[in-house]
Image (tube, rainbow, N blue to C red; front, side):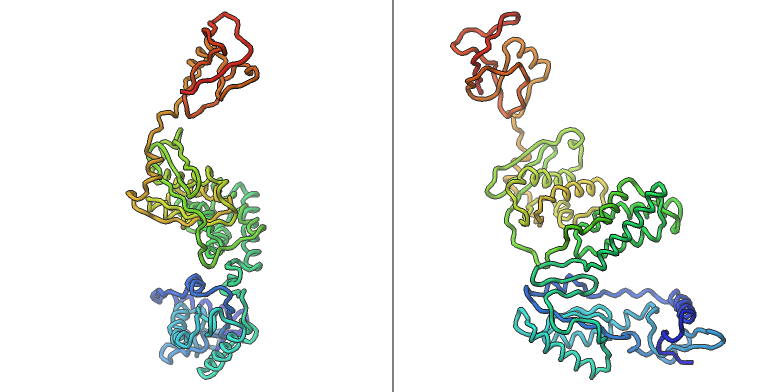
Length: 481
């Protein structure tokens, strides 16, 4: 019996066809094909464009299977043998074959003035006309492609797609807003992301961080597939993928996974994601500030436009960090120190002479575990509400930031507590400041400053009191060297 579709077979017939297609697919060579991406389409749009979309109905059934190849796809149900006449969707080569055929149609539409994307059977476009395109241009564009598809014998879904023109178009799982310069996830997809993350998190909480592999793979795939609208998606799923890889190495490809301590925190983040909004700009905005940063083996420095330069030293455990981690840390520390200079919504252009820092700032992810930990700290610092756009320059041109990070400040020193206690008992109490007019507070160690301080002398001259003598309770002045 010849068959053009699987709908009339029922669940049992569809299951039999799926098993047969799986057997055939195992014998086929894997064909790689590059599909058109939504980010390339959005980059070609202009603000306030009115967009249209359409969906081809039963796309694969427009392609006929050659009579010599149909025997390989036969399957039997209740002693009846079915022979597919058209391409079946479960076949590995179906998307590739359809994409090659429809590509000719898309080329004709582009030559006619359409700015479009075609992903299998889903198409979206900005119609021909003066930019930004209007609703009238959208109506003309819809009439053009409907007439073209009818002539080619391609049937369209009547209830799918946007035919009237809209500045907010939902396409391929994302909502593109040309008026607001944003791309975000629709509510249905956002609810699915939260729900799957919450389910896996509940399972991990009930089973001492043990979870099934399939649900964990599902939630990781859902999150990463939303990278276009969520820039930090890969950063906060890296721990989950590490747990998946660790389970494969230790217990096999189908074994349950034991989550690290970091993964539940990331899952909790995704279970509550998007409550206060999310999204990514369609087109980059002009930077409001330029921040030059640099790091050396012992210090970091940063200089932004119209602000006081900042610098600091790597102390403690940070002193032994790799230079790439220090370069990213220099960006984080400079942003934190100059936080009062930035407004919410500003774009800060980061100028660095490290290509590694350039990559991790723009991608918000790294394969290096220590570097990825620093990127996490950078993202937390980025909650100031600014957007970072990194740019690379040669080291020889990063003059000011390089000088800040490589010059040792000889005035940045302090006395040891023991020696300060001796001086304070002999000549104290000590203060740091100008000329106080009130009695000094009880002896206390002054805060660390960038300049040296000398022991104070009583007003009116004379020698400072020695140990055992009475101390004067009024008027002390400080001397700065």
